[in-house]
Image (cartoon, one colour):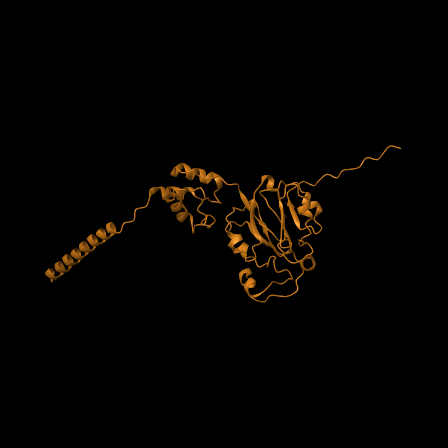
Length: 284
């Protein structure tokens, strides 16, 4: 009985030893070396795992930064220039500085100005609605209002306004990850430069229909009149397919286009009200 127990114990110990040796040899044979810089860079990154950098997560982005010879086109929008400078110091590669951006909604078709003409009874999803349905209004280009963009925002930088039926972007919380841009099936969210005091001028409409059709669907739609293009001193306004677009790289925020827009489709944010010039009365 005792010999049986000893034999079993010795057999088990031998099997365990052989297995350990085999596992050790296999681990050495298939060992994958990981540059210690990858972990160091990953610790610097914000751990948002938002995909805004083009990689599936911060770990993958750290690997790309360390293993790429040229990282001038790589950038973490959440961490911004400060984080990228730290990464540059660790890996000894030059990083291109980029201007900060913020998400902007290119639609102001609220329930008040863009009345509903039908009712969608399918799933509450912009992605699904855009595939099987044109929308609940006569505008085929505007916001569908189901909040897919809000659902994908990991930073609580967006919410749906129940009164307007449109998403609201909280600029101070926006990290420029671009998740909302990718989620929108109508492409009505754009990343634009984050200027001082968040000053912005842009056309809040993407309707490419002719003037009469566009205006009937939404009272603040761009009607392609070209008045903004004609008055712009810097040629920042581009007219394409009955629609105006303001190039943020060229626009100097003079606001002249805002004043001449007949439908108020051009949006200006955070500007102080213009002073009204009072004409002096001639002396009698």
